[in-house]
Amino acid sequence: MASTNVRTFTEAGWQKEVLNADLPVLVDFWAPWCVPCRMVAPVVEAVADANEGKVIVGKLNLDEEGPIAEKYGIETIPALLLFRNGEPVDRLFGGQNGKADLQAMIDRHA
Image (cartoon, rainbow, N blue to C red; front, side):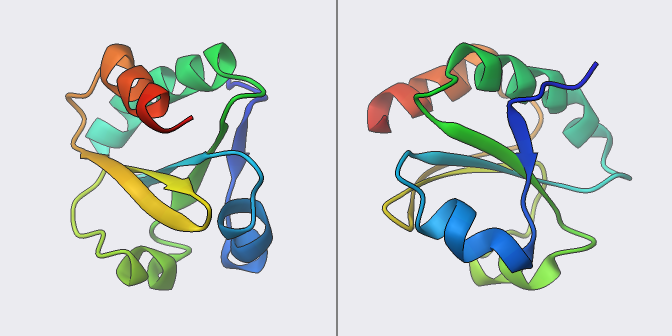
């Protein structure tokens, strides 16, 4: 079952939910056809649950929201970007990242 702590980001809410957020925001750039994206999804959900109230976690579907991904130079997925005060401050690429990698990234900035 998917975590209720993982949001879905779209262009319509990007400014408010990511760029103007009061907390750091972890964005998982993914696509339904991406096998490594599906592999990292449970890790993202676990991190979202473990950091509730500390960081906002959400997913952005590359196929549906391509212009946002292009703006941040996302060419490889999965890509995990951590935003703080409207700017990307850290990033991880590829499906080999584990929970400890994501948690360390959050701990550096949250």
